[in-house]
Amino acid sequence: MNQLSVALLISSICNVKNEEEAAEASLVEKWYLQNLVLQWRKKVTSLVKSSENGVLEALHPPPRIEHLTVQGFGGDSFSPSWFRLESLLTLRSLVLFHCGVLKILSIPSFPSLELLTLSGNIRLKTVTILGGSTGGETMQHASSSSSSSNGTACLSGLTYIGLYSCEDLQNLDRCLSPEYLPSIKSIEIDSSSDLGLSMPVDSFVGFKYLQDLKIHCKLLCPQGMVLPPSLRRLSIVSGRKVDFPACLQSLTSLNILHLSSYDGMESIPLGTNLQVKCLLLEQCSELSSIGGSHVLSSMQFVSISICPKLHEVEQPFKKCLLTNKDKKELLQFTYHLYG
Image 1 (cartoon, helix red, strand yellow):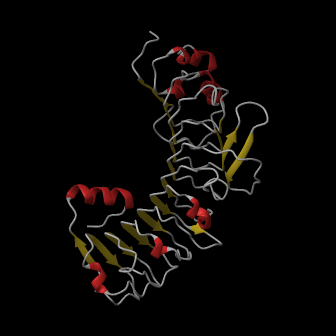
Image 2 (cartoon, rainbow, N blue to C red):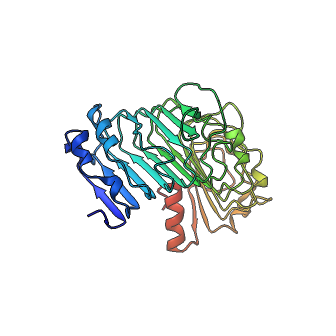
Image 3 (tube, rainbow, N blue to C red):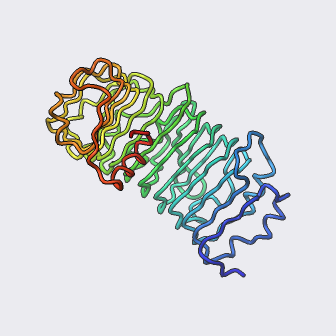
């Protein structure tokens, strides 16, 4: 029975009593397995289940695994011995969600990893990128406490990173930078933490392949935001004042601009080099100019509301010339309910 189909879901792992019982699955021998979902429970647990660290150790995936999803894990550290380069050389995607008590995550520099999603890991404090395969590993940190750089570890093939509802994570200064993610194309950050999240937005200009940037959280940014000209879609929802990018006019490829609860901007130079097709503005308290109402005529989608200092258009202002498919894609990106 070692020649299973390429996909396997193992559910209710929380009922497995110990490491020995888990080892009976002999996952490492399932050579044809490419997609593995390890589901402890469907809901988030708030209590540490130390025994689940051992169960995780015994659930050793086969070497050809490409997609690994872990849901509802109750251990406080994701650090099985098989979670290393030699064991997962072909890993392309890693998804961890509803791991409610997970505090530490160390990710080796998997050369094939393209997608990383962390969602609902509300106690996650530290994300570490490990360099090298055996002893003498170098590491970079993204954590709720300060850390130092010891090397050039990176996820060289990663094109997408999504962090959602990781409420204890307060600092991404040593993770979200071109040094660690040289090939990134899409960044999505969504957190409702009142503490605010620090990230090096002044270095984002170095993401030369970045096309989609979505930041929905309270930003803590001592420097102004600097963005790369490759950017095509930008969505920012922030409850704090952040310097709006001075490079906005250089974003000649930008198609979608979405700003909500954004206090760091008085004007948007629309109609110059900035020729967006879709514009969504909401609760921008300091915004007073978008370059005149005439700049909206060439756009395919416009939604402007609750911008009290903007008198160039009557609010709420709505316009939609998009197909249903294009509108659906727009709403999926912004995660906002515009009618």
